[in-house]
Image 1 (spheres, helix red, strand yellow):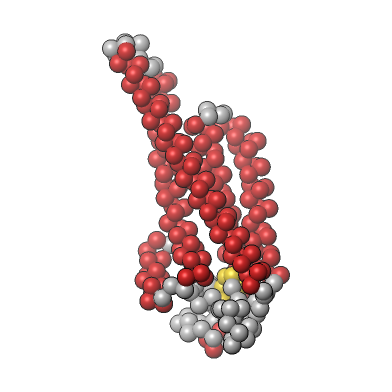
Image 2: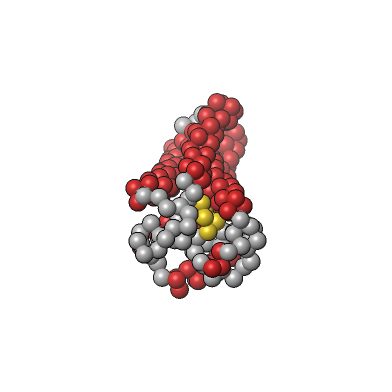
Length: 238
């Protein structure tokens, strides 16, 4: 929906090119759905990586992981994702943001909590509260990235170890008594799962790099010309 749900007077603050036909409530609804949806996407991706680690690295039964572990992980995901949207909503901290063409976390106007000369229309919270919100997002994002990297390394090490074992058995037996057809099929399935895991992880990184850049801008104030390039890149990857 881009800038459509933003308040009709948003152009008095930000020079968005798109039209705005909403109000405060539509802007909050857009931001809430985007934040919670993105959080659930990340945690679901983490659950998928945990699934790969459990089944490939530790050899757990797929049905056991699906029926016992994944429901617990999804409950945890919802219990974390919902507060990420509800807390800023309660503090009027879901507003238009000059670096994104949609409503998201931030004061309105941006940086009004940092500059005493700018009066906050909405989201005028303390610096401590603001850092708590953005710090929580950064912390959770960092944990998720670490989990993705660790799970990927674990799966790759398992794949290489299995491959070396198969080659060692074949070499020791000079091709005789090599792994049977079932072993070869299991190995092919494992390599296929690795390719899927790499694709999912790649999609995760490409999707969330833009959010990381937006969070980095809060602390480092990246130049506007840089964001013009980023906006064009979003059209390609998102």
